[in-house]
Every structure is written in structure tokens, then in C-alpha cells.
Image (cartoon, rainbow, N blue to C red):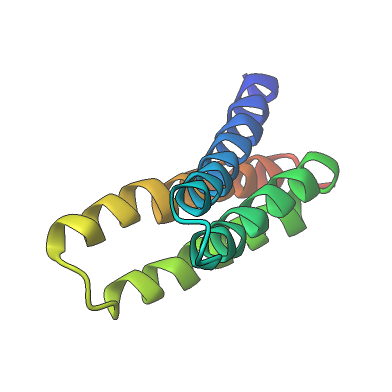
Length: 114
């Protein structure tokens, strides 16, 4: 059970980070005059990917990084001037997956700590 839970968390982190990086790349390709989409995708996607890869080797630091990223992005989304629909979409796709993965990994570490 623990093996599959860890695998699910890694896949969730990698898929979420890859989604935001690809979103930034596609936004840049649709408007190559402005690199803002590429930078935005890298700012939100790379930390998730990095934390997922760190969690693959060290569970505790990776889970803490995933949870901190989720808290930071939730704060960012809360104070953004976007419409409610966009905020809900951003919360579901940007903040919730790292929070779920980080929480599960933290609980696995806590249950199996030396």
C-alpha cells in the first residue's frame, strides 16, 4: 500500500509540474512576442517538479516543499485580481495536487519514521 501511495504522489507531482510547464510553452508558442507565458509556466511548474524529484529520494524534505509550494500558490491565488472561475481553476490545478501529494508523503514518512 505504501509503495503505491508513494508512486501516486510522485506521478501526481510530475504530472502537475509538467502540465504547468507545457501550459507556459504553449502560451509562449501562441504569442512568441512575449515570453511571459514561458516564465509563468516555469515559475509555477519547476518548483513542483523539483519537489517531486526531491521527494523521490528524500520523503520529508520533498513533502515539506510540496506543502510549502501549495501554501504559497494558495496565497497568490487568494490575492490575485482574477475572476472567481479562474481562481477556482487555479486552486484545483495548481495548489491542490501538491498539497495532496505532500500530505500523503508526509503521512507515509510519519508512519515509517526511524
